[in-house]
Length: 468
Ligand code: FAD
Image (cartoon, rainbow, N blue to C red; front, side, top):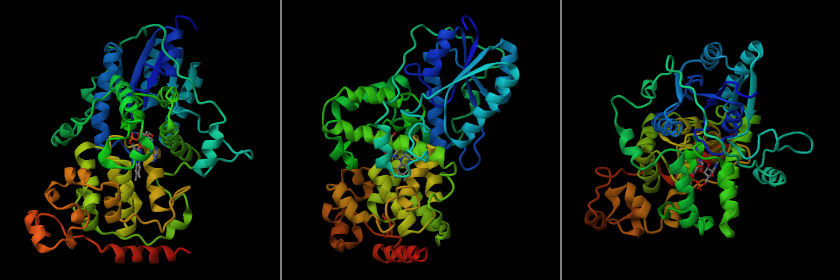
């Protein structure tokens, strides 16, 4: 293959290090590095607003790492690639596999195209520790429960990292490549993304720095601390992982070198990401259909004003409102709070998990089809290995337990900042004089609860009984 021209087709692997497709392609000769914005996902799964803004900057960073040689296109993947094959006399295409159903279809189309043109395709597992078809039960079926999946996965060593030895010799397609700005990923009118992105440094170097800082400052104590949203004890690596600015194998190897009780727990969370992708691969409609078909009959409610109150962080339940406002302001929400707000939507408000999935999809910078779908189904009770339906998070006791002194809640719901801890998660129980002293008028500058917790919990459990 020496001196042949190869396309390297980048998607969710916007990094130079530990990129198996790039590493192999560079050994084969000159490369034509390409990124194609292909709107192939059906609505509502086309790329969300926060992800678009992240992608814009991630591409800019990656282009810099490639010395400005990243070629950018918009259109149907197989058509764009077909036109490049002819123009550049391409002999090979290299890519790291992706697992959203429409990405799988893209890969199939590219393979068909290459077959007809005598081009060799080289595909790699660059984005996960294990390929989803690698970890199976003895009878060949896939695991539906996390712990046995993890046990089985741990019997096979995860993929080892690989690094490019020589500087890539890139070809710039001056004629057809468009600019990153031409992809129109940044909103024209609404400038909310500028505020949101102030919370983040984007790109491969930033991701590596974040991993190093996490290992130095937060890994010790992660197992306990990860549940407390005010403690900054999680890695915040999720958007970097989603866009492939860092690989799970790089994380695995760095963490594996560290001794300590928290290391295994952290790796286990990274394996949840593997498991979500694995479920999506084997149950291709995880994003749309209840994994447990019993839930197809669940009597969900449509309530536009409740949905709006949830989306905008105006439910009257302070920890729920803090989470939804964190999401809007930063494009991120702490995992514990994601579980609380999701439980509130699907159980206390009995609004379909699809509505929550869609809002998260648009607002999260780490919006990820597999993780988002599997997690929503987990909370809703309809998923594989889901939380039992009767486990309904109580936003008052959850707040009191996991944000005891209200650092997180006061940050995102500043109108409650002067309320004593005792009433912070249930302001409606505070005596009038306490509310007055804290400058709060319920229903005026902070909402009254939109539903009664005990009554809505009973209704949810009754609705669940109809499925039995
Ligand atoms: P850390 O605690 O530092 O964990 C390290 C990495 O492990 C994460 O970056 C992530 O890749 C993985 N991970 C951690 N927890 C989970 C989990 N429960 N499931 C799968 N992978 C996990 N995660 C996403 O990446 N994208 C989503 O769209 C998404 N949607 C979610 C929706 C709901 C309703 C819920 C309850 C959870 C969702 N999660 C999602 C999972 C989890 O909340 C985030 O991965 C985590 O909060 C990211 O923060 P971190 O990087 O600091 O995590």
